[in-house]
Each structure stands twice: as C-alpha cells, then as structure tokens.
Length: 91
Image (tube, helix red, strand yellow):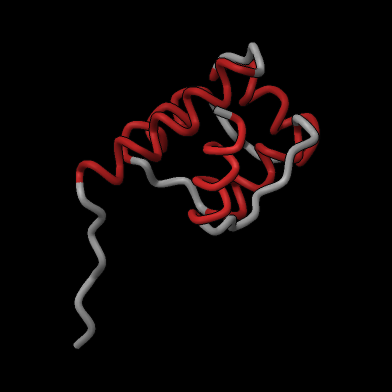
C-alpha cells in the first residue's frame, strides 16, 4: 500500500504565506476572492471554504491557477538557481 504524503508544517506554512502574501499584494480579501471566483468560474467558493483551505494548505493546483488567472498571473516552475542568480545580479 502506498503511503499518503503529508506535508511538513513548515511546507504548509510556506504555502499559506504564499497565498496570503499574493492576496495582500493584490489588495484582495478572502471575501472578495470568493466573489471573484464565483463570478468568473461559476464556482461555489465561499469565504469560509477558502479560509479552511488556507488554514489546511489544501488548495488544488487548478484552484491556485484560477486564482492567479483572476489577477492576470500564471503559475510556473522556476529553477531555484535562476532566482538566486537573478537576486545576486539585482543586489
């Protein structure tokens, strides 16, 4: 039987912080996010539902993609090396 993956508390906190920071940078509350998701995707997202997903760090990748799309962003994987090298150049 395959063992179920359980993210570490540190990883869950990183995910929570990622979403919270993104919403803050886009001047959006959980309530507004729920309304936008309902309007654009016809999804029955409620503020309590989003808060639960945030507290558990249990967003699906497709949900995060939808959230990013609302604000004209996209999700993509970026090699850590390139980020670290760019930060050194910027410093």
